[in-house]
Amino acid sequence: MLELRSLPNDCARRRQESHCSTCGARAFSVCGGLDRADLASLDEIAERVALKGGESLVGEGEPAQHLFNITSGSVRSYKLLPDGRRQITGFLFAGDFVGLATGEDYAFSVEAIEDTTLCRFRKRDYRALAREKPALEAALLNRATHELAAAQNQILLLGRKTARERIASFLLDLPTLDPLRPSQKNHVRLPMTRMEIADYLGLTIETVSRELTKLKTSGLIRMLSLNELKIEAPEQLRAVADGEV
Amino acid sequence: MLELRSLPNDCARRRQESHCSTCGARAFSVCGGLDRADLASLDEIAERVALKGGESLVGEGEPAQHLFNITSGSVRSYKLLPDGRRQITGFLFAGDFVGLATGEDYAFSVEAIEDTTLCRFRKRDYRALAREKPALEAALLNRATHELAAAQNQILLLGRKTARERIASFLLDLPTLDPLRPSQKNHVRLPMTRMEIADYLGLTIETVSRELTKLKTSGLIRMLSLNELKIEAPEQLRAVADGEV
DNA sequence: CGCAGCCTTGACCATTATCAACGCTGGTGG
DNA sequence: CCACCAGCGTTGATAATGGTCAAGGCTGCG
Image 1 (tube, each protein chain N blue to C red):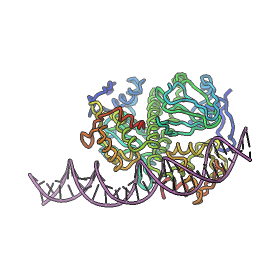
Image 2: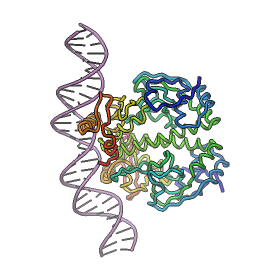
Image 3: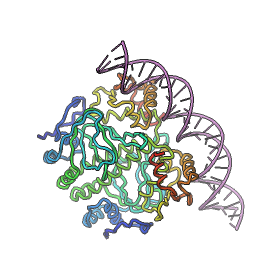
Image 4: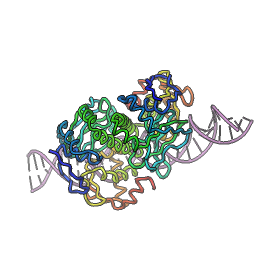
C-alpha cells in the first residue's frame, strides 16, 4: 500500500490523513533519496498509533525504545523541573520525527496537542533496516541536522531576545512549521494555548498576552480570532524579531 | 599512520595531541562501530587546520562546505544579533564535530578559545565516503543525536532556570565536556572568561560574578584561582541546578 | 612601576514575573 | 432557551530578578 505523493505546498493538504507508509513518504521525501523499495521496507516495520488531544506519547526518563513519525495532527515535546516549571522544546507536526534526540532514555515528554496519528518504529528494527538501506540513515541524519539548527535558533531566542522579539520570531517561524497553515499569505494559525506559547518562549502567559496586545495596537498584527491572526507588516515584524529595534 | 587508541578517562590524556586519523579514532570510538579501514579512508580525505586562540574558523552565513573534527584545544560556537548581543551555543572540545547543524550555509560562527587543531573534511567527500561506509553516517547521526539532547537541556536552562540555577548547572556539566578536566574529583577548570560564560548562559558578566560569589559564600564551591574551583557540596549544587530549592 | 584587561562589588533601574480581578466563550443542565 | 460555570485570556498593580552604569581591585606583563 505504498504511494509516493508529491508534497503540495498549499492548503490542499489541509486535514489530509496519510496512511503509514505515505507518512514515511512525506517525511522522507523532504530529505530526498528514498525510493519505493525503502518505503516498502519501512512500512513493514511500522505500527500505527493514534492519540486523542492531551494524551501522552512518551514520558521523560522512560527507556527510549521507539522512534515515531507523525502522520497527522501535532504534538508538543517538553521538559519539566521538579517544581513544575515547564519548558516546551518543540512543536512537531505531520512529517516530523519524535525521538531523535535520545540516548538510552527519553530526555523529554511528548503529548498530543490535538488528535494525532503516528507511525511507530522499534529503534532496533529501524537501525537494522538502516544498515541495509543507508538512505534511511541519511534521511534521519538530515532531519537531525535541521532540528539541531532549529534548536540553536531557539537557544539564541531564549538566551538573548526580549519578550517582544520572542513573540515576533514565533509568529514568523510558526507558519514554516505548520503543515496546516492557512493558505492566505501572512495569516498565522495558533493551534496552541497562550500557556503553551509561554512555555515554549520562556515567558508567562501574561507577558505573551501583553506583547501580543502591543503588537496589535502598534499595527504590526491583527487578530482575526483568538487562534488566528494576520501579519500586517511582515518586514517590520521581521525587524522586531531580529532585534533591529 | 593509524592507531585506534583507547580513551583514557583520566587526566593522562591532558595536553595530548592526536594526529588527524587518531582524531577520527577518538571521535568515533565514542560512537563505536568504526574499524581501521574506515579510519584509513577518513584519513585520506582530511586536511589539518591549526588556529591560534581567538582566530575564526567559520562565519555565520558563509557557505557550509566543510565539516570539522577537533583534535586538540577548544572552540566556541555562537550566533549574533544585529545590535551585537551574542549567544554562545556551545563550547566544543577535542573529539567534537563542528558543522553538524548546517544546511546550505553555516548558521553560526566558530572561533578558537585557545590554540586549536582540527581535521577538515569537505562535506561532499565525507558524504561520498559515507555512502560506501555506512558506519561513518551512523557515527555522525549518533553524534548529532547527542548534540540535540544537549541543546534541549540548554533550552530548558535558558527558558526556565534562574541565574543561580544556570551557574550551578554549568559548573556541574562543564567537566563532562572538557577532555582536559582536572583529575581531582569535583575540581572544575573554567578555560573561558566570565564574558563567555555569560554569553553561554544568557546572563551578564556581573550576574555571573555575583552568583559565583554567592555560591562561594554559601559554601557550595571554593575558588582555587580565577579559573579553577572545587565543588564542596556536589549534592547540594545538583539540587540547586535542578531547581529543588 | 604603571598600565591594560578582566573581575568584583555597589547603587540604581527596567523588564518581566507575580498576584489579583475581570471578561469572554462554549458547554451543560435546569 | 437561558443561566451558570469552567477554562482561557486580558488587564492592572506591585514586586523581584537580573541588567545597566559606575567605581575600584587584582594580576600579569612590558
